[in-house]
Image 1 (cartoon, helix red, strand yellow):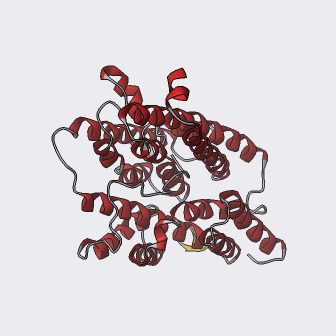
Image 2 (tube, each protein chain N blue to C red):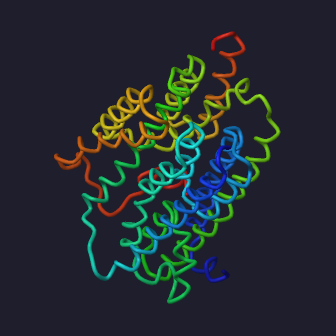
Length: 107
Length: 241
């Protein structure tokens, strides 16, 4: 792990900010009504961020391509998740497919 | 605590228990992945207790492990956690606790505890469900993370075991329910494409934030399937705190 101080600062900011979100909704409850559309946009933003994280961590390593083994494992996991396979099956399949491909010499 | 068991019927308690077991397993993968990505065990351990919001912790670990700045990672995590603001607005006064009890009660607000609380018919049961689920997650998420981290520390060649594929697979499994909505899927794919296109050129961490431009696709037209009340963005009913 690089610079520990910075990581701790980031963790602290995330923890404090998250608590602030949790508390402010409670405190503002009597005063404002949050439009449902805004709520949905926040949810959508979260899903988009996470989807982008899936794409970048599956397909890239540093600034380049990660090789075929990892995205292949993630693709299999995605198909299983879409078909409502149990969480553990999805995650273990991803690792197993990737490990198998690497064993067979696929990068 | 005893009042929680008496207030809630067995079916609700069983559902809450199942949700907590699911959280434990995600916690296992979280701890293992964090350690495999090069973080010492105390990072997932501390985060799981202090942040107590799974998706944002995964995001933080993922961005920092890819070489991104921890501050950018915290901002991305905060954006994911901003959904707790409407959660707090949606919960009737008194659910999280009375007076000072509200301060610790607020910390156990998460996707599951809010869903279970809102599903109960009256304030007393809402409060019981909220606390039962909130405390269950408070035990299962960090517990899973620490045990997962210990298991992960025992594995040395993470790439031979394909552990690097687990991280995107976990996140994908958590958001797949949301992606069944066609408009959401399209926006997510475009966001992912933006992030991928930017990766060769921008410092790590930024491409993921750039993907947010895809939210604009959803701003104009009203949602195809409007859902009343706040719904957890990630993993409705039982996948991540």
